[in-house]
Structures are given as C-alpha cells and as structure tokens.
Length: 414
Ligand code: GLA
Picture 1 (cartoon, helix red, strand yellow):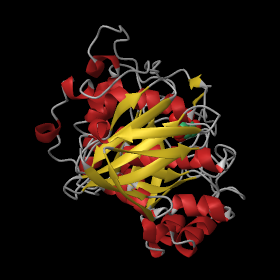
Picture 2 (cartoon, protein in one colour):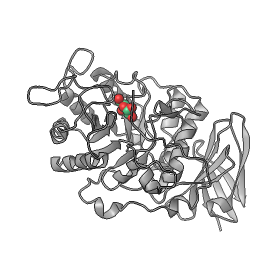
Picture 3 (tube, protein in one colour):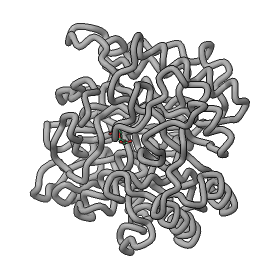
Picture 4 (cartoon, helix red, strand yellow):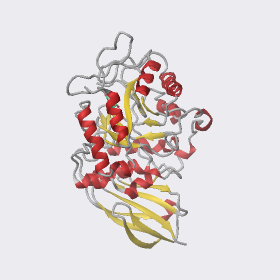
C-alpha cells in the first residue's frame, strides 16, 4: 500500500490565464547536462496496468515487443517498452548489487537478453527503481546505492528509467531526485528520467502551486514527472492514493500545464485505454492525454487488443496533437460538466480543440471561436474520424456522447 503522494485534486475553475500567471521553474539553465531525449512527449508501453500489477515476465514482454511492431504501434511512435516493479529478487547480492529475478516464469534469460531483444525490434528499453529503502512492492529500493543501481541498469541497456516513491527516503526528496539525475549523467548514457515521486510539498492552499506540488521542482532535471496517483480504468473517480479516474486526472492537470514543455513533460500516468472503460471513455482519456502533452504509455495487453482499442491507440491525427510542441493546452471553458480545451498548433491559425462531456447523457456542445482565440470563418476537422466537417462562422456545434469527446482541429480561414 502506498504512503506517498500529496492530495492533488484541484477544484474546477476557469483556467485560461491562471496557469500562465504562475511562476515557472527555471528550466532552461538548470537543464544543462540533461540528455536531450524528450523534445516531444515520450510514447511507449508498460505492463503495470494490465499484467496484474507486476506479473510481467520475459515471455510476455517479448511478445509485447513483437505486437508493438506487428500492430504498427512502434511505427506510430510507441518506442519504449518498460519493465515496472517486480523484476528483482528480494535480496541484493554479496556486493550489494540488485539481482534480476531469473526464476522460471520471470526473467530466466536475464534482463540483458530481454533488453537486446527489445532493441533488436527497433524499440527502446525501460526499467524501474525506487528512491527509498523499498520499491512499492517491497523489493529493495535504491537508497544509498543510487549510482550502483543506475550503473547496473545502464549496463543492461536501459533507455528509460522510472524512479518511484513509496517509503520515503531519508532527507530531502528533491535532493534524491536530483541525485538520480546526476547518477544518470555520470553513466554517459542518454537515459530518459521519469520521476514518479509526488512527495509532500507545502499543502497550504494559499501557497504558490510551485511550492504546493513538490513534483514540479523536478522540472529542471527530469524528463517526465507524474502529477497524479496511479491511473485506474475508471472515467469518474476515485481520486486518492488508491487511484485516479480520468476526470480527476484532468482536474489535477488543469492548473499545472504550463510547468510542462519540451524536455520536461508532466505525466498523467500510463493509459488505461483497452482495460475496461467504454470506447467513448477510452477516446476521451486518449484525447486528453494527447492534448495536454502527457506521455502516451499504453497500459493494455497489446497482444490481444480489440480493433477499437487498436484504432484509438493508433489515431495518428490525435497523436500528432500530442507531439506538436508549439504550445500547451488550457481548459478555456467549463460549466462544470461540459468543458473545452484548446491548444495552438504549429500550423498558423490552427488549434486542437477538445470538447469533453463529463456527464453520462449525450449533449450538444458548442465551441464559440472566441474562446479558442479565433473569429470569423474557420474549418473544422474531426481528428478521430479523420474527416473534414466544413467551414463554420463564429463557432461549431457538435453532439458529444456521454463521457465522450470531440477532438477537432480548427483552422482560421480569414
Ligand atoms: C506505484 C507507481 C505505479 C507502479 C507501482 C509499482 O504505485 O505509481 O506506476 O510503478 O508503484 O509498484
């Protein structure tokens, strides 16, 4: 059971302007030495959500690597294959090294063989450590052996390192987070550093956001920073250390988006697409993760996914919004149940616009061009349907299913 992670559910509010008014951490100068591996949000796969939370093994992971290639996911950008918690034995060896669990049904061929296999498929390899004395499943944590563990993972060919937090390390978490960045730098390997350590921060509601959410402090040296508790395959609720629904993740992310950007993305956690929500709910999750620049780390069993799940994960025009780093998205309009997010795209005069219906009943929703910074005529394209909808003056109305969304590209046509 987790003991980590600050309450981070933020009340719905009109956010345009609010996030912009926040002080951003000094990302440019302090980022010196950070490997240049996250110009766009990272994409990949991690088995934590689908393989009974830790029961990934080398056979499944090889098959997943094969499936990422066969389904077209690798070519769509899903490049990291990540082995999460539960890869190691519960004791270090006599030299204090972590030991890969090579028992039958785990990783009998060793982690280097698996890493080589994944690399041989044109994919990248990721693994998991923890800041404190234990991992979240109670296996050995890296406290006091940070460099030794990072060196070991570098020797196994790791390209993506997720560092998690359950029992807190002694001393300042932020110092520990920085220490790992330094350990990675010393390996000389361009490893993507994922901080999954929400920490404590200063919970006073009157404190600036940058102080309230300690994880934001990692922006100068991490590539990916988790902002909410573990995602669960639920559209609405819960919102605590036991898990975070899609809507609750949206609410956590809303005021924080401007802390994210090229090189240091805020992360909404692994996707739950294909893990039990309805197709409309899955589309909303995927569209939201995409528009806010979260990582897109599939968390489903890609070996046996349905055609609909595959279609959602391969929605190339939605993924293109995620990978467009021109600007961050903001929630620009909400009545508490129906909301509109907007993100300027690279093409001049264009916006990605996401309409989300938080209710179970379908709704006719309208996006007035004014709220997305446009006026007059604009063309509308539905990014999931990959279909042009026409030219519209002053705004656009669309029927949005319950718990569903409309993901649009709107381009000004003066
Ligand atoms: C935490 C993390 C999850 C997963 C598990 C592993 O809960 O937030 O993403 O890594 O630990 O134990």
